[in-house]
Image (cartoon, rainbow, N blue to C red; front, side, top):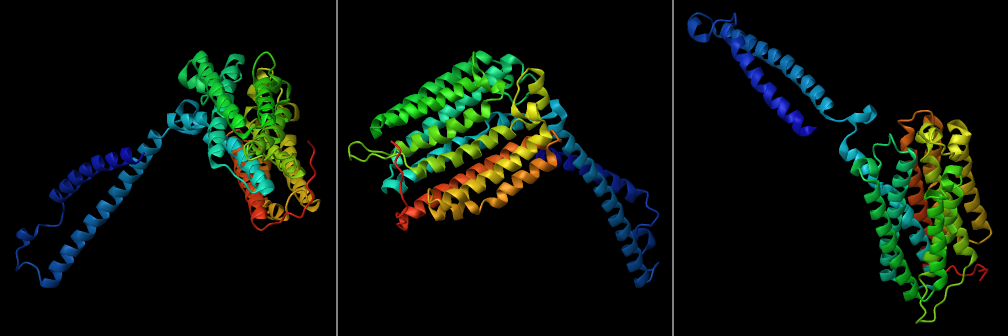
Length: 401
């Protein structure tokens, strides 16, 4: 750490000064007072002083390099190493437990759903948006905390040091906090639904929460049967994204939003990118999942075939994007903006292909997917907003109900 390194250098510098003083006292070059002003010529005196200075410079340089190397080694030892099990820094464990980047799965469906509502009606409620966002963050907190608690109870997270349960030491306390967040989040979403005057929205959100519950909570735990990815797709794609779209309705203004081909298309794309995060989060946990009977898709497929699934999913994402653009289910500008994220999709594929056998490196795969999810979602939302602003409204809207 910088402070440890600074303290080390200061301590070593005092030792260097003492060594220099000792060197001067035993130096073979006589002091100037001994030589006297007439003992040496002017040129000789300059040469002697120059030689003396050069010796001191070289001596100081080598010893200072030595103490820097020593201090760098001290600093390296003082930093907990992530590959060392017990040596993982507490700050790193807390950061991993919070899973802050994962909260993009709350933001993106809201952004896309609200943008689709704006594209449909030209209206947007900032107040509802932030109430929905806060409520959704609470729901995601419930998902994360309850997942850690239930995985701890089955032994899946026994060696997962960044598990919240392992950090706080209380499965019961973790569950209490989780269900408190769920209650508060659902209250906020219910209020938003009543404010919008659209009960279909809260029905879709309830379906989304049920998908989350049966994925990880007893007695269902369908994630242990390899069904987590389909449930994730349904929860964050068609259910949540469509619900957030409907929440931008306004009964007082007699503004009701139909479920159109545009919102359904957008919700499918959001569902794919969200599911990719969940799929890639299993790469570094294959052995632990297999040991406790958690038959995730990667346990069944293996990491090599799993990397091919990731490649196929990314190709399918962009193929579907262009197909929806050509069919005019999505505005052309959405296709263009989302197409700009192709390099990020290629980065996900190449990273997984190169590192799927390395448990240390492949841990980051889900964060590469988070990056794709966030950028793709932002591009999709921006495309819908821009399409409305430039009045591209001549595409057919198929209303289902």
